[in-house]
Structure formats: C-alpha cells, structure tokens
Length: 305
Length: 322
Image (cartoon, rainbow over all chains, first blue to last red; front, side, top):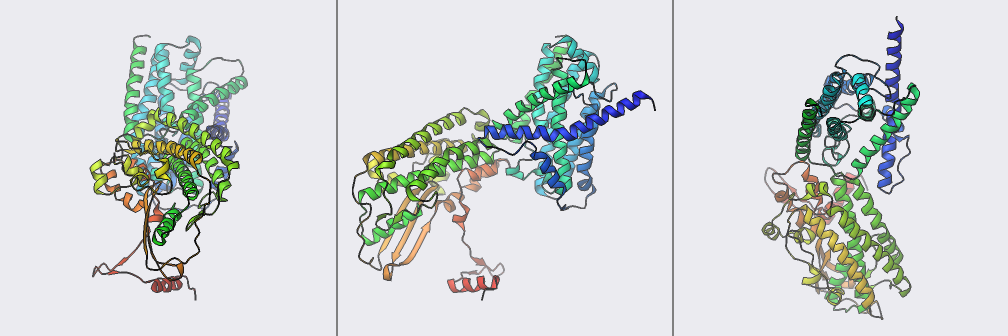
C-alpha cells in the first residue's frame, strides 16, 4: 500500500472519529446556551453522551417489520459519516475528487431521505405526516445549499471543496460569496433541524414525526447522525466562508476551526432560542425567497462580482 | 376560585353577609390566581408552538406570585382560604409592602413580555388569523372568558354581576376584536396587568374590621343559592340547594372549559395540523373539568345513567376491592 493511500485512510479515520466523538459535546454546548437564555441551569455539557449511552442500553421496541424501518437509522448514520470524510474539518478534506461538493450534497440529501423512509415505514400516522414534512423541507432546503456551493464553484472554477477553500483563503469576500454565505447559513438552521425549522419533528404537534416509533440503539443512531450533521455543516460553513486565518500546522488549524465552528453553532443556537416553530407552508415560502436570493448571488458570481 | 363560588352560593342561600375586609381579601386572592393562571397559560402556549423561551420566562415571572400565595395562605395552589361567611386568614399590614413590591416586579416584567411578544414577527405569524372564531359564532356557541373577549364579546361576570369587592374597585373588561389566537394572547396579557391594578386598589381601599361573618346558626334547609365567578378561563357557576344539618342537598358546578370546547370545530376547520394544538391551547382548556360520562348501547341507542351505588360496585369489581 502506498503512503498516500495510507495517509488518506488515516485522515479519513480522524475525520470520522472527530465527528463521532466531538459532535455530542458541541450539542451539549448549544443546550447550555439554550438553558442560559431560558434562565435555567441546564444539563451538563456531556449530557448528549449520556443520552446516547442510555438509548443504546434500552430495549428496542419494533413497530414495523419493514426492512427500511430496521435499517434506515444505520444507513442514515453511515451516510452522514461518509459525508464527514468529504468534509473539510480544519484542513482540506481527506478524500478529494473533482465534484466532491456534489457528492456531499447527495450524501446529505440521502441521509434526510432515510429519515423520511423511517417515518413512512413506521406504520404511524405521525411518522407519515413527519415524512411528508421532511420531503417538503428537502425540496426547499437542498437547492439553497446546492446553489450556494455552485456560486463558490463558479468563483473558484471547481466543484471541489479543497479548491474552493484555497480560492476563498486567497481572494477574500466578494458580493456573490457573501450572499452565498448568508443563504447557506440560513439553510443550515433547517439542516440542523433547529427552530424555527424543526417542523419535521415538532414534538408538540406530531410527537417527533419520523422518529415516533424508533427506540433504543436505532433512535441513538438517528440522534448521533443529527449531532454529526451539526458538526459537519458548521465545519463546512467555517471552512468555505471563514477560512482565515490559515496556519501552517494541522493541529492549530483544527483547533481554530473548532473554535469558529463553536461560534457558528452558538449563532444557530441563538436563532433557535428566540424563535417559535414555523408552520410548514410558512417555511416553504421562506425558503422560496431564500432560493431566489441564492440565485441572485449565483448571477452575481456569473458576471464576476 | 371554585371555593369562592361555592361559599358565595351558600352565603346567598343562608343570607349571610360577608364583612367588607373578607370580600377584599377574596378579590385579592382571585386576582392573584388570575395572574398565575394567565402566566402559566402563556408559558404553555409558547411551548405548544415550540417557543420554550416563553415557557421558561413566563414561569419564572409567575414564581413570585406562587411564593406570595404561600406567604398569605400557606399554600401555593388551592389556597384553602374561603369559608362560608368570609376568609380564614387576614392579610396583615406588615406584608403589604412585600406584596406591592412583588406586584411592581410582575407589572414591570409583564409589560416587558408583552412588549417582546408583540414585536416578535415569527410569533405573530403563527398566531395572527389562526384559530378564528367570529363574534357571531362566539355568541352562538356561548363561549366564555378570554376566548369570547378576544372575539369582541365583552362578557365578564366581574362587571356584569359584581361579587366580592369588584363593585368597589371596578374592573376594566379587556376586549380585542381580532377573533384569532393573537387576540387571545393580548387579552390575557392585558388582563394580567389589570389584575395587578385591581390588587393594588384593593390593598389601598381595604377597610379595617372583621374578615368573617358571625356564622353560629345552622344553615336553613331547602334554600337555593346560585353564584357566578369570573375564573381565569371564563365564568364559573355554582348552584346549591341546602339540606339538613348544614349539609348541601344538591350541588352543581359548571366550569368554563366544556362550553369553550364547543368552539374547537369552528376554530380548526380547514386549518393546518400544526395549528390544531395551539388552537386548542389558545382557550386554556382544563380537561379534568370536562369529565362526565354516560353509557350508550350502540344497538338500541339506550342511554344508561349509573347511580352512585352502582358506580361504587363497578369500581370495586374492577379493582377487586372487597
């Protein structure tokens, strides 16, 4: 085995482990922030780890013999971890290929589809309603992310994350990339299933929707996939739109990257805590406007602004 | 609140006059209950639409009211203050200053909350023009309390049939004409501020003297008493027929929720699923108040009403109590 392959494998493993092991900590931090605004003490920062452990030790109650119901949580987590390998966390992503940005969007969308499938196959009306909502959200949110990435692609002349990062670090902000950054940030709130866009779960309306029948380890996998997604999206946003300062060593870059990611997640947490949940039609209208804004950004990029 | 209604009904039946100070103390406690009930509701309504910040902050503001109730009566809830003929404990002069201080805090924080939620566009989007009940429907379905007042129906027992000390301190009926959930939010918040005003006036105007009437005689049998109280959720009626040995012969209480629930079909017709929980929540339902049952034989359509003895027997059989 050549040393470059070994290096890729090692870096991929680092990324996957980072995402798996660190994401509950970031989630715990956001919970602390939410508690602070609520005037509560809040759970300890390591509570999400305990939640996962607790869920994994619980008996699983299976409501449906459907294979999708059984395997969708594992596939969902696997897809998110596959996306983690393509994600630049503090450094260039471990796996690089032309068009890896497109692959990333595919993997993330597919993980959302798995959530949808879990709901549809759960034999619960709440799950089906949640899945219908998830589908609408996918249809409206993914285009925003894709358009923002294409805008960067047009500017940097490549649909590869590492090229985009190099371009952004070298060039600094332009009008089109700023618009793309805003659009991406606003769509991230929905990707992370944070208020005002946690419409899919909406525990007071449809009792966690697609997850209503999931329990035990399977539910833990879904939760973990959600925590992982939060970290991945924060990392993506930070790497693509706040690339500076760039340091020489991997360790320093990673440390600084994590700090910036924490700031992004705190911002998402602030939005989460000062908003009620939108209705699905209101969210669709909101993202309709956001798609339009993202397209304007893309147009600017095409004319060179 | 129910105990006030019951005591008033018995007092009416037995022709007992409650001393003025007793009536003022009842008014203060009723309004304290309104404040905590409306703040509790605000929190739950916020929680229903996913706005847990409102839940936590509203309940934080509510907490001093509960402490105050405990200070005055010994209990946070179910104050146990009413007796036929008056109230059990006085509100001594020494704690007036503390009462006023807590009231000032609530007043300030409620205004802040009102300010914060009226400028919150997302909240407004979720509540405006949702769960509409027109004024005509509200009258036709006999809706009560804040639910009716948010549809422009100015019904309020405190003004229409004054009891306790409401005739002396007055009460402003808060009416909004939006006919939607938003109006119900605004009505309740404004009523909270009005309740603070009423308590302050009560404390200022409260005459000295006895808090209990001299109830030494037996309450005569066969008399009828009917009393109405404006509870936080709407009007509550208690009907009493007195019996032998100062015991009630017949007693019927009507809480407002059953009446208000009749508005739900109108409210949720054609609405989104997401609007149903907040629509139901917007009338502050108390489901334990609506429990009643009868058995219907589906084939013959015959309705059977169980007697007390039969119910007891059923219950014993069910839980194998011998």
